[in-house]
Image 1 (cartoon, rainbow, N blue to C red):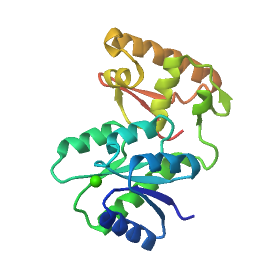
Image 2 (image 1 turned 90 degrees about the vertical axis):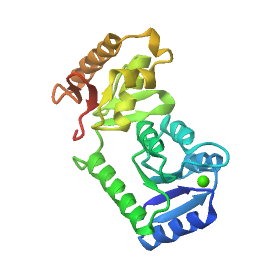
Image 3 (image 1 turned 120 degrees about the horizontal axis):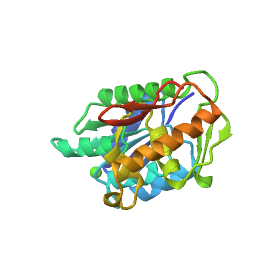
Length: 226
Ligand code: CA
């Protein structure tokens, strides 16, 4: 299976270099030069990974990533300009999987692409059949072991956030930022209460293991192997 890689990069020379390098490595690359066509393609095609330039003409790569993350957990590797340390941190925080700093060698980038794809495969097909969680964003529904969960709005958003990033630890503050519209009006205890409800609903479907891990003093994460 040749993975479909979407390259979102407005500098043609860089886009061509990446296209060539990925094609040589057995991928099926597709190039767009701005954010809007990237979103169009994502609706039509099955894309396995996105290489996303931070500086695009119509929208920043970060904004585009946020939009993509509303509906998709497709792996994203950011291309950032040299020395923009802040970009790398922000990129990973808002849901990027990795970043490569310009100028980069094609070999470095293809190595990162392969590493991210490997990581995705090992976490998704851990038990060789259907994943424990299935998200149906159109219906705002999540299935656990094939059974639809009855979730409140916040429970849905929290769980969907976890599912996009198995193993990643989210602090209560971060969950509030991601899920609540007015985080300052809520408190840490609210997150704990929703997590407790979520756990009860998951346990009702499958008693063991608890898919949500508590990191004491830090926050919560979804168990990686389910
Ligand atoms: Ca650019």
